[in-house]
Image (cartoon, rainbow, N blue to C red):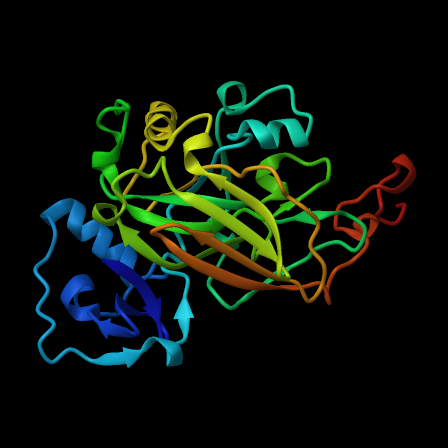
Length: 296
């Protein structure tokens, strides 16, 4: 199944060119929390197993006319895998990879959905696109083995890990509002037999910047789940961004980013730099070694 949110939080099952409204069947009666109806369904599935879906008489909405939203607008946590492709390690001249760096966390408030805009924060600091396969956890995972890792996956989605190239920690540079476009839906795990054998392509304004296969991941999906779950317990609805290949590059106002992943989907967002400010004007900046606040 392909599941997403649409039209102000309704849960839809993608059926060809249509969305079938399965909100009450899969998520139960509302209102739903800020995490959304799909998140509620994932948690329910973890507790009670998969629900039987009767589509007789269900509302069908043309996909072309639906307002798609991020399928998981507020995940419990977003885990990132830094430097998880050797070609990206080479292009950025890193001396370490995910094997030495471990994982990092992104703010869940950074999520946006398809058709929305990434907002550039600074006029004079490069902000890059990073196209990645996203793994959605379906069952609580703590110290799971690589062999058992995929049993804890609900599904997969497209993730853009937007990143400012400045001096702060990754969790800051990658957590600005709008810096985690996600969607357009979550494809359930049964439709992706091997997540470590998917073609990935990311274009910016019509130019292909990134092209790879997830077969080239340093930590494959199984190993990444096993490692991450040895550090932190993963809960239903958590998202792991598996890392980006070579080809990251600067974004500019008016750009369109398109990420396509085999068997998963196509995510498109815009770029808005109209509210960007100079890096030196960010809150808390200390000019010339002195506190920017007025002297007392």
